[in-house]
Image (cartoon, rainbow, N blue to C red; front, side, top):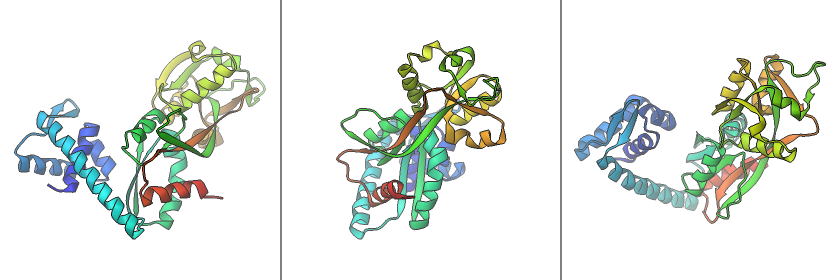
Length: 297
């Protein structure tokens, strides 16, 4: 067996999908299938059972998964020490990022970083903010980008950019086309919310509580798992919503969706670089963090 086979095996085990593993590793699905088949032939055991559209580890697969994680971690640690000694910035850099920075902030930053360090391959795993934070705590990645700050003594949160949340609607919410509405107006309309672990939702809830309101007072019509899903729901007329201004900016400019601020309330939030305290960062991760903090200054 080789590292490529083990990496494919681990990704299939974690995503429960050959196609998702292929997307994350930038490979084709037949290549992933070939890696798994080679492992099964070499070990003479079945590693996965099919359960509808998903696959699950067999008892043999569970044993190999634990060993594969240790092997791959040892490989990464060895490369880290080697590259650190050689002061090289090259190889893979995996980042966990919540949806807004992953889609609207990071691509431009990654482009600039790769122009300086072309031998890096960036792997961005999109999760909600709490999943990003948990992934960093569990050391699944060196660097996370999240829209939520939590009190956790084992983690470090460094703000690196700011965003604003706005109310969005397909139709006019004010008679005179004013771009501000009273907070009580939100109670009149069906509302589309992000999922409970979303940083957007947590920030919105915090601002509502400052004004004596709660999410329970809203007429929630749907909860959706991404900013793009929210945009499409608003365009379809399901209800109004709250979203990052960066996510809606292009739609606003075309007139497809209208944006409003709540009177007397500017809903801003920071995005944070999340790292594990006490963990020595690889040259790749350290260089990228420095770039994020200094780009444009």
